[in-house]
Amino acid sequence: MSFQAYIDNIRAKTGKGPEDFKRLAEEKGFLKNGNPVPTVKANEITNWLKEEFGLGHGHAMAIWALFKGNTE
Image (cartoon, rainbow, N blue to C red; front, side, top):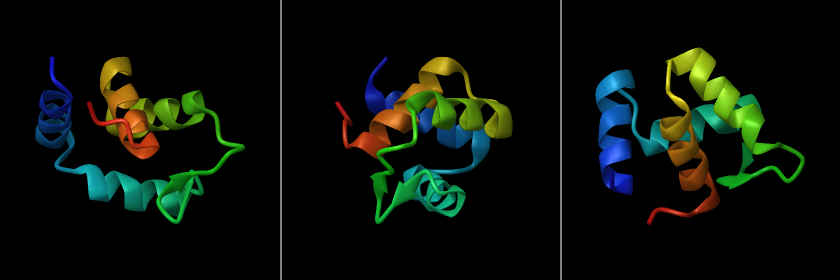
């Protein structure tokens, strides 16, 4: 599955796109100025995405990759 397909599926499931998740992650303290806070671990973010939005592990990792700037 392509990265874009993951993002499209996440939007279909949650109604939220990349900018929405970035804003929400900023509010939670996971991102600062659009970048991951160094002390925040990937599993903290993926657990939040799984619990709050019902994402599977692969989809949560796609959002984490988006936060890190890896979109390929």
